[in-house]
Length: 274
Image (cartoon, rainbow, N blue to C red; front, side, top):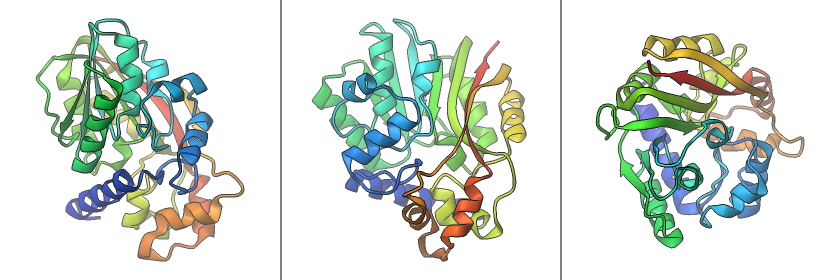
């Protein structure tokens, strides 16, 4: 698929989500309600306390894991979130690093950045900053952060190798990567693999598990490993709604989406910069 078309489709999709406040990338249906986002977040590992701690409107239910729970963040550290959306993981990270630390969220969608900044103002988060930019070209200095996190975003990039090179660049020596993302354990149906709508829906852009780990290692990271893995599941009541959310105008039948789900795995990947 054409990279320019991919970026436009992804940007347009998430601009719409920012405006509507709906969830369209996680395993929940595209209900667009706060309740749906909360239910989706609980299924992928967030506690009720974490969900309640973030400003209202920050949790859009877009993740596939909980990277802040596994990143071992410490007080005073600087954290960079790749594809920060409305800021949910950034606000959780901010509580872990404390007032002496800093969290930087980067997102390529102006509407998401605007929503995240408003959430930061509402929650009075003085140690969180949101920057407009692409995760393939991070607006951050070399060796300026202690940890890089991301939640179900790198699968959306058409140049994943570049994303990991950039993550490596901005980390200090001894810094670490903790990524929640979608990978493949098998082949996708052709109708799904070739769909821009499915790409923007966090499905068609996923790569095989082994290839994903090789890309992280090729960027220079060491001790690269999967620390948690879960099957990506659609609740039994949601397959038709979920199929509609990713098939767009491509006419992908629900049964093809269900078949694709059997090849999708949610992983948490760790890597360290020597």
